[in-house]
Length: 394
Image 1: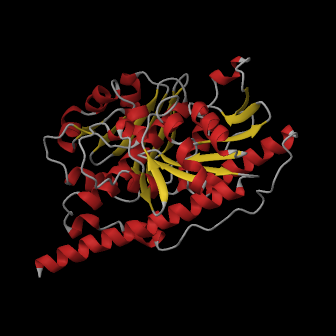
Image 2 (image 1 turned 120 degrees about the vertical axis):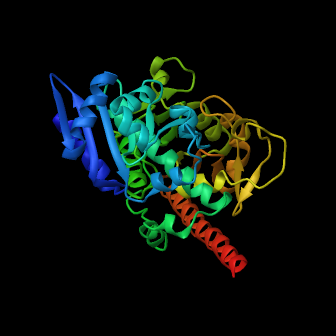
């Protein structure tokens, strides 16, 4: 287990979103095994023991998302409900533990929330997530929590009253990062022989790892597929896109095999897109700023559950934006009619689907270009909001 803890800790370090000095991974074997911050071990062990989970992860984001989120909420708030798909699918909502309660009740306050949810936000501590059975579950839950928290805070900066400037101290590394566009790294994604399984699996593996390396997914967020005669190669549900060998299913179009049971939950959407577009490849990811801007709807309507019930096709920089439930829900109906025109489509709160005619270079390039546009557009909108506020205050 210590090897797994070190592996996932390194993934956090490579991703560079969590403060290494405030990160703890804990697993229960014959006795607790720790990897990371010594100061958090006692509290982590208490939480894990009371919760009875196999894995526990505690970490504070390098960018002060947690501090800003809690500072902008009323003191009586007990939870937050982000709008992104990861929250709806994995988290439902995110409970909060304030520092006063943590000081008074200790581990019990965190365990009370974690027993009902997969992750919590703890003031002064950061994000806390558990894995009931495996370390990988803990990692997946933590990354879902980090993604949801990040998206909510950055979305709120565009639509809620702006916080005091002092609360944005610490965000400069993010602004600096956004000033440098993502590189168009599509070399090595050459066309492959559709009859050669080895070539297909190698192409899927390369595209998956490249997508993760560019930060267009958080390892397991997303899926990837290739259409061949009478079948689809598709990544398995919950598969990490940078660890795809052995995690790609060949699903026959006639469903004459049970392999489809482990395939991505987006299998129905992939099938429908292939059928409608004539594409050979599909790449789906959740680039952060694409997700944020997809949630920024400024149209007036009476739709309550926009993420599944909105029947409008909006556009963002010329790219169609649709709503729909994941899996066999609305996405399988709403994506195919719009994705053929631009080879790219955005889903409300759920990221990008991109298609390619011959290989993965086209969908990956399209995803990079669009996320770069979203990063720039986000900065422009945020800058305009601050300028407007400053003008009003003068």
